[in-house]
Image (cartoon, rainbow, N blue to C red; front, side, top):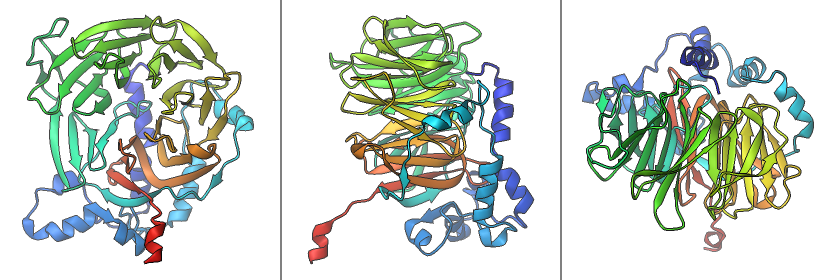
Length: 445
């Protein structure tokens, strides 16, 4: 992945076109920055709520799910969508990779209805620091979601519409517990590159190889570590999992070409594998035996999780990959690439992909399966999240369409909710979709 932060942020600014378009088309803004307005006079609460929230009931009556007042713009939503499709620039490390990948793409059918829009809130805004890293939103229940907002990690409860700051890394952060290998001096002004939350454990990775571990139900930070002091040290992804022994572990994928496994029972590094290119994402199979490794190479790797030795290369993508995920059945997994495709693989036959799913605008930067294995979500860098029916061969999809850069997507563990972080100067928000249920027995009443 790109190493120089200055270059990265220039490309993020270039990608974030919604605010620029608003400058061009909007005549007299009525939507301000919700976070700065949230402490205004109580008399304005009702007006404020209508500005920062959009509910399912309002959307059914025709209100835009993001609250964008299209009737006040000099361009229609349809026209602006067409403009975005024509002008959005997909970042490629290998030129023309997205064009060349089109011949392999699987034909899919839109029109699936698996998750219904429930709510959009602009009172929490997720942010992105590196344009290629989009794992900054995590759900731990259908009502609880964690996201990165500048130097803060925020908890949002959709049940009571309350936000709370869990961790602030703008100043000095140091562990309040003593563990072997923990960096007791801590860090200052950590720039968060990636996030993972599971149950009560939160792991934040940083641009200088920082790892900050916090238990949400405990005060302070439990553990700090720096993976490497190399210049090329950014932590690209973190994956929390339960070891067969019952202990909680996490894996950190790093730009120094390393994958490190930490045992959070002992707070120690337990494994360290090195590869020949920067590792952008790692996923562990449900049985704990195999690792999917993707990074700055068109080929991915299927690796033995105990030895780090390659079991099989994954050939098919044409650019660098930044996302991977396992189906809970342990046979199927998916990888997302800057060639604008998500490839679905079957471990029983890795000679070719089961399916090649195409994005609309750009790279596939985030992938998640539901815990029951029925659906898979893949997120582009902006505007589109695709939800596929994994149970029936990825032939049908629901396309979720909005405007803004995507900071992350996350299904709740019970599959009932899907959260999408949207980063935009004006319409940055958190979208919530709830799983559609067909209660046929109610029709009999």
